[in-house]
Image 1 (cartoon, rainbow, N blue to C red):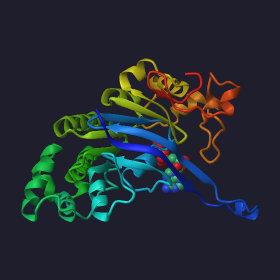
Image 2: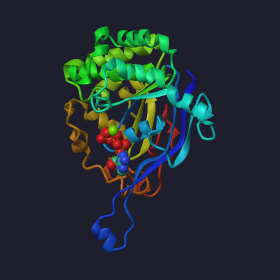
Image 3: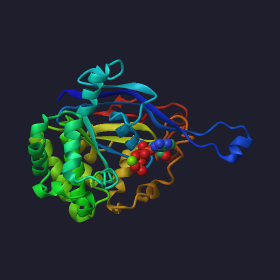
Image 4: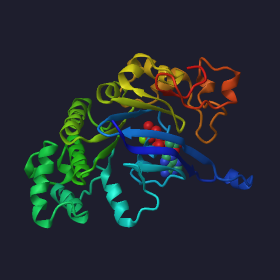
Length: 322
Ligand SMILES: Nc1ncnc2c1ncn2[C@@H]1O[C@H](COP(=O)(O)OP(=O)(O)OP(=O)(O)O)[C@@H](O)[C@H]1O
Ligand SMILES: [Mg+2]
């Protein structure tokens, strides 16, 4: 499998709000380092999982990939071509090929438009098909996500959460993307419908040859669904390996701790992982050296001063002692 989407050295910082105390003390506004030097290849046709505790930068990475955020540094290439320096036509084509599916399908759908209007608008604005073919294409999209065709005449509020997520997926598919970035696409859904939506992703991937990036807290889902997993910690990727092997023999002490916490994970509770390892340090003031060292059972003096580079330990791992 070759790289379809290549991320190199991506960094993104957010400037927080200055508190009154900060102003009095003439302190600058706090800066959150949401992404730090993230490099990653996404291979054509694969499903890549991205995992890590809340706040580690998963959504920021997803948003950079679809250009909802501009990264402060680094490049993103699609088929080897960087987006910087493209003219606007090439840029539009580029962004069409990478689409996002969000966690909350209700918040991301226009409540005043019928499902058919929403899909038709995408098809028309981006000139995906000629106007005469739009209605037929809307039907096809509904078929693809297994919604009845009469769904086109109805409004988002008339659908259940699982059905709304299907609409969100249909809208992403309307753009005929090569890559879909799904950010917690099932975590807002009832457990009973999660599996249906997950199976839809699997089916679409094999039918359409999609490349899928699947962001989730649910490690069981990652194991079921993905070919490779990237584990993030405080804005960095700390381990990136083939799913089965990584679950069998995780190399990074952080991944080991995450996997140990799996039986205790309950849907909708996000603090369980943290409870196992102690508190996550603030991304406003990340630890020196290896950011995981204050929580790491293997940490030595070196870990608090020297940040580990990614090295091959069967697959890339950022740990001095893996
Ligand atoms: N628009 C923003 N402005 C300021 N800070 C932000 C913004 N978006 C994200 N952050 C901060 O960046 C860090 C990474 O956030 P991000 O949403 O990417 O994490 P995440 O891994 O997706 O978390 P979760 O699992 O809770 O969705 C967090 O500290 C967050 O508070
Ligand atoms: Mg997120």
